Structure formats: C-alpha cells, structure tokens
Image (tube, rainbow, N blue to C red):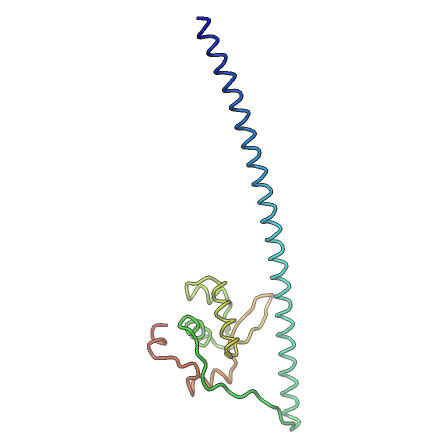
Length: 180
C-alpha cells in the first residue's frame, strides 16, 4: 500500500505542476490577446478620426463647389462669358459601375439616394459602392453630393442626366437597363 500511496502523491504533485504551467500559459495568452485588442482599438480610433476628417473635408469642398456654382451663375447673368467644361462624348464604365449609375439615374434630384440605400438596392457593401462612385467621378460622371445631418445624398448633375438621355454618353445597352 505504501507504493500506491507514494505513486498517488507523485501523480498529485505532477498534476499540480501541470495545472500551474497551464495557468501560466493561459495568462500569457490572455496578455497577448489584451495587447492585440488594445492595438486594434487604437487602429479603429485612428480610422474613425480619419473618416471624420475626410467627411468634414468633403463637406467643405461641396460648399466651395456650391459657392463657385453660384458665382458662375451670377457672372453669367451679368453677361460675362464662362468657360464651361466640354461635354463628354463617351465614358466607359464597368458593368457594376453602370448598375450603380442606373440606381442614381433613376432617383430624382428631389429624392437623392444615400450610399447605404444604393448598397442595399444593389446587394453590395457600402464600401464597394463608395469605390464604384469614386471611380465614376474620376472617369467624368458628374455625381453630386449634398450633406444633410452628416449623411451624403447622391444625385446626378441635371445637364449630364439630360445629355445621357439624349446621347447615351455611357453607352448603356438595353440589356443592361432591363436587367437593372
């Protein structure tokens, strides 16, 4: 019986040591997770701050654009010639950009759409929709934004909308329009 008792004590001692090592390993893992979480939180805060800054900057640019438009209208009423950008004759868009364009095109200037509404209607992420719109603007599609309570509302420039209707600048095919 002494052998069994001695073996049991060794097993309990080994078990106790294993538990301590396991607890130390878990606490080390916990510290690493906490450090990682702190890093993620710092990055998230930085991304949020950058987004807010860009939103404010975009709002200021929209206000500046609106003021320039008002100034151009005033000057044209005074009889001063204004150099207008030539109307585009053709703009090439990807199929997905054409879908986004059609979603904006079918909304009216009285009821513009938000990025979120576009994303929902197209079954895409808001991030992708923003990218498509940025690409279209870079290609020359005059998508306008108005901010109401820090929410961007999108619509097309009226002249471009009429030009698209008359001359199909974006080369939209009937199959694209009907599939939309």
